[in-house]
Image 1 (cartoon, rainbow, N blue to C red):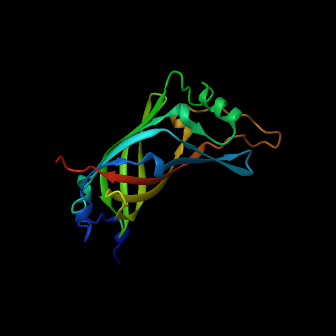
Image 2: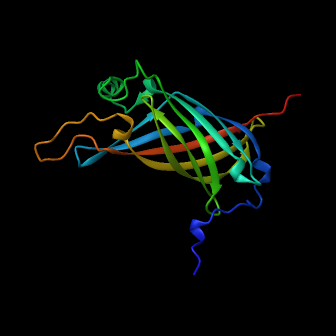
Image 3: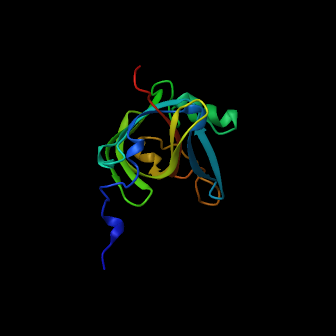
Length: 196
């Protein structure tokens, strides 16, 4: 029996039309994260300011690439006091490390509508390889004539790997903030129009 999930699929039927260069539409995209809080619940947040570019090759996904820059100070967990703490050197140290970056190093198709993007994630000047699986949600032309594509993806990282290690021990023996953080990406990207 062959394990089809382990073998990248090189040819993407019917996706040649999405080939091109794109910019992330910040107003219709979300870069979020989920952390477990006090061992019993989850805190969700997002970064509101970011920019990114994507090159898609629908015929040969291995030739696709992406880059992303996030403004750390734009962190938003809907609780201002917590957000201010996250900006300090206990966590992201936004004053000294104002951006988080991701630069892809490889891409492949791993399912009918699933693509894997590997790359280098840099937080607080620490760079580690990460891998993200994205589901292709489709493409459409919006009312303004822009061609859009949509992707959703997640990955889990250890925040301690990037020097974000602050924590507090609870009386019950657990910790205030989980080490593993789930990163969530909901991407809408607009295709660059050729110069007239």
